[in-house]
Amino acid sequence: MIKMLKKFFGFCSPKNRTKFYKSVALGVLDALFGAMKIPAAFFAITAVLDNKIDTQAFLTVMGFMLISTIGKMVVYRFSSMLQTEAGYDTCALKRIEIGEHLRYLPMGYFNDTSLGHITSVTTNNLEQMSDIATRAIMMVLQGGITTAVIGISMFVFDVRIGLVSLLCIAVFLLVNTVTNRKIARVADEKIEADREMVGVILEFIQGIAEIRNYNIYSRNSSRVANSVERKKNADITAETTAIPAVGFQMLVCKLSGVAIAAAAVYFYFDGSMALNYLITMLLCSFMIFESLDAAGVYTALLKIIGKGVDLVDEILAIEPMDIDGEDIHPKNRNIRLDHVSFAYGDRKIIDDVTLEIPEKTTTAIVGPSGGGKTTLTSLMARFWDVQEGAVYLGGRNVKDYSFDSLMENFSFVFQRVYLFEDTILNNIRFGKPEATRDEVIAAAKLARCHEFISALPEGYDTIVGEGGANLSGGEKQRIAIARAIMKDAPIIILDEATANVDPENERELTEAIRNLTREKTILMIAHRLKTVRDADRILVIDKGRVVQQGKHEDLMKQDGIYKNFVTGRKKAVSWKIA
View (tube, rainbow, N blue to C red):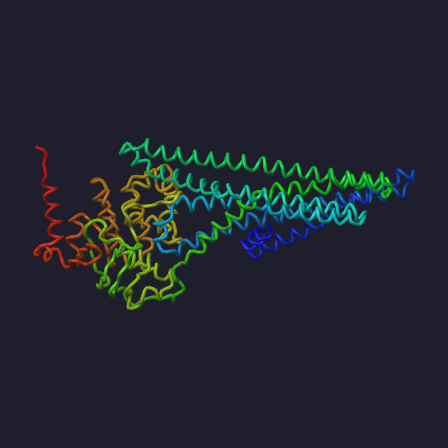
């Protein structure tokens, strides 16, 4: 338990840790104020038994009770506020810290880690930390402090009863340790079931279009059902394990109070304890285990809390890319790859590539699926770090740049566009957060999306659904281009930007791309012949290598992948239904 408490306090920021420490200090005061009921009861009982109920006795008892009651109220108010503020602030800061940390992780991490895991940690686990964890930690500490104070008070009144209470506390702690070990065995399965269920449900929702399209509902729905069933079984197992164990622990707690009361009665009939002491010790026998009982119940949650801390720390412990470079503003944007190699695990994706891309030129990248086209552009923008060789921008290794100064040079338009659940105005403004409304509209006009935005119910203030769910693919693409126009970066990477656009949107999208790419360095990954044939240079990538490069006319004179690609496209276009 001590190890768990240290882990939790280490998890908190220094500011919030101080708040928790203050709350613990106030907890000591709360216990002292609560313990003042004991002398109040003692004086009241003594006055009644001695038949000396006078003004002095009344004022003494009332003084103790008022100080105890008012003191506990004031202390509880400040202690609760400190706990609440520290708990919610700690988890808010951890969510922000995770978000910042994820920004600088290599993209390969997101290929190996499910969205469900990250979502579960930042929602379920941290929600427990901000609410249940804070309460559990403080209840355990408060219960321990209160029990210690009342136990010391019992030693003051009668050393023998103090020793009996100490023995009972030791027995309770032993039972509590066994209880927590039982619960710990099922806690991991419960947390893993939570994580799996969130991941499966998210995958199901995100892939609902494909599920319907290929009629694979039954297979995917069974995965969801199985994950929900596993979660249900894990929860039931956790409860059926915890309830009997905690129930037995509570029984031991109550019997410990009975043992203290029995010892006091025995000493009274033995003649070694006065009646006023007996009655006071009987009251103490109920008080001492009241807080310890509540604390014991909450200790069952410490394993889950500790696992939550571990899951957050696991994400934060993942080694980020070295981003602490210089804020470099290169004189040119020439890109050079020098014997670059890169692999996902044991699978080599880029194999000893050397090439140069002069600034303000258009380079088209084509090749078979899985050949390494997207990975190559990702290495240029340092989404991943190369494992061999080096990438240079403006004559400087991209690793010399700070992450933000490197990203100032790149804008991206991907095949799959993600729009945030916000206004269209703000989605475009992400390219330049300080942009005025007029600047946003000007960019939208260049991106050929002003007309359809204006026709929306709230125009630029229309809230788009998460991911842009209520817009067509072409409309989302043009908003993404408007966003890139706002950023006005010198290097534009187009990754299949027109692949899934319907013919009605294609003309508008092509014009938008033309406006985006004027006087820029363009790297385009494309499968459409008309988008690549006018490029200054075409790179053909296959199995991680540049197997051909040159202009369209030159490559058409060579036998190889590019000529086969073009010939195949022309045949496809000429197909007719008889």
